[in-house]
Image 1 (cartoon, rainbow, N blue to C red):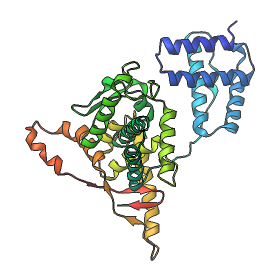
Image 2: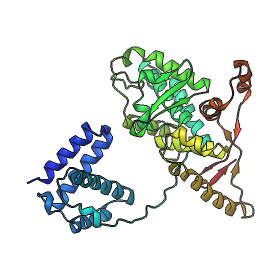
Image 3: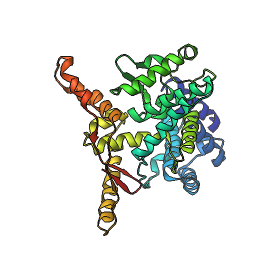
Image 4: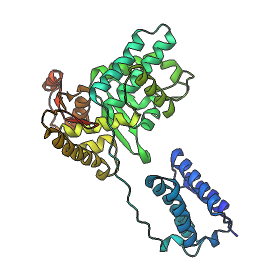
Length: 357
């Protein structure tokens, strides 16, 4: 008799050795399947029926948000597909279950560009006013992390997993391993971002050799997602910014800035590492919704919520070097000197109901 606990352990081992899933995905599977095993209280796998699954799904809806429910169902569903594939069960109880529920559309939250400037300037002030080498080194690393998040739109997990050899600071390229170990290469065109990364690289060169990660903590270990979140909270507080800022909001700001600058959505998809254009299109939906809100606000006499802003140079240069330059015919380097004269690029940034043009 195959017990549920046994098949779950075998399936997780299969996911690790055969499917080569990353540790985060395995951890999510492990949590979801353990929860499933505990809640249904059935030992024999053959006793699990469609009704058992329907009752479990109903309980999930009572406890979690739709997105979480969807993930947990997917984990259990994958387990039963495996059991069917391995002929451990004769019939898949999921085959007679229709799962239809609509996830609410959650619009991405962005950071106003003046807030980004305040945030970054606060980090540099901390570095400038640091009284000890420990504080100065911390601020240097924090500045490099924040600049890279804003200039590339990479995920926090991608940033923390960067290896030393993934960055080529001579030509300004970064090799990023995204979800599913998919590779993409981004060109950083802004010299000030390259300079802060180079300064950090030189300052932490010796300590990083042990773990091979580009960003490390003061113990010489890889910088964690949680450490970056704490860092962002720290400078948000120091700068007296009245907004909760997360690492992913830098990514949203990067994407919406490019989109509002009329950058082709397919290029944005490539730079963000989205597996489907549908994921990237959520930014279009967000801007459309806020555009309607803007029209309503501007129709009110005496109420104008418009500010003048431009697409920051780091974003414009990153886009140009990563997406435009490879499409241009081969030209002598001198012909690209015009880049040095490019200072800003018009953009519309919608943030929290206000419109930035």
